[in-house]
Image (cartoon, rainbow, N blue to C red; front, side, top):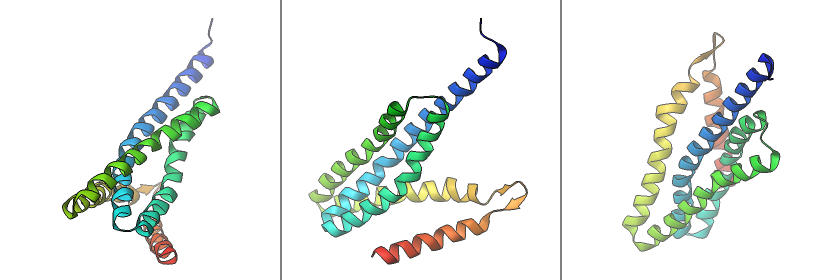
Length: 161
């Protein structure tokens, strides 16, 4: 017979696994337009495509951690966590192939891919991330971290470019 404590721990584990799966699906959907940006930027010139790919790869590291952390906390085996995390990135590759293909078709296709990718990213940033970043945490205003993040991003782009 299962004790109350074990039952609660199983519920916590299942909740963490569920959160990890939801994060995996959200990131897979999010990664598709990122891939379109990589592929279509690669049609302009390969150095632009490489730069976009590098930036998105750096951006995807914390995304992978956001998927892996709840899965690991839910006692999912390491190999399965690794596989699921990699699986979320496959949509980036699919988006890159489609973005490259459409971007090569015409200037309109290139503009369509870059516009769709940029619009998706801007929507997520302005509708979800920035309002969330300006919320108070434990009564403290964390707006300074938004500014630090923006400055760090600009400096990183300047250093690489």
